[in-house]
Length: 240
Image (cartoon, rainbow, N blue to C red; front, side, top):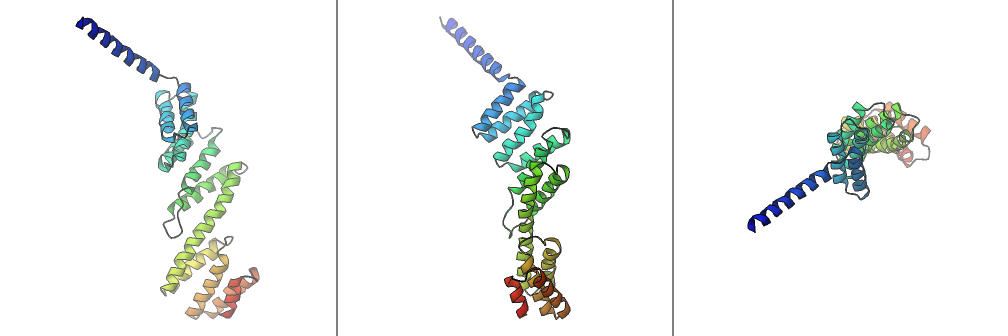
C-alpha cells in the first residue's frame, strides 16, 4: 500500500513538473503577448523581463526585434533609465533601418530628459538629453518626434542657461569677477533665445563697471537697450 502511494505521489510530481515545463515553453508570439499584457497592467519590471526572454529564447523571430523596443519602453516606464538606454542602443545598432528607429532615438532622449535635476546640481543628463534630441532633429526632421524634441530643446537650453547664471551669480558674490564674467558671457554668446539673456547682459555690464571697463559696459548696455528696451534689467543697467 505504501509503495502504491509513493508511486502515485512520484507520478503526480513528475506530471506537475512536466506541466510547468510545458507551460513555460512558449512561442515568441506568446511570450511577446504576455509581456504586452504585463505592460498594460503596469507590471513594468516583469514586462521588461518577459520581453528580454523573447530575445533570448527566439532571437531570430520578428518578435525579438519588436521585443527589444518594447523592453526598452518597459524599462523607461519603470524609471530604470540605464537599462532602457542600453536596450535602445542595441536596437539602434542592430536595426538602423527599422520603421520605429526614429522613436528609438527619441525615447533615448527622453531617458536623459526625465533625469534632469535642479540647476544647482550636475547637468550631465541635461547635456546628454540635448545631444540625443539634436540627433532626432538632424536625422528625422519631419517627424512628430523631431517636433517634440525641438520643444524640449528650448526647455533644456533654458535650463542650461539657468545653471550658468546661477554659477555666475555665485562667483559675483564671491568677488571672483572674471569667472563670473565668463559665465554671463557664455549665456550671451550661446543661449541668446532663452529667458536669461536680459539678466546676462545686465550682469556683464555690472562686472565691466566693477572692472573699470567702461567701453565694454556701454556696449553691453546698448545691446540690452536695443533688444529689450522695456526690460527691468535695462532700467537697472541705465543706473550703472
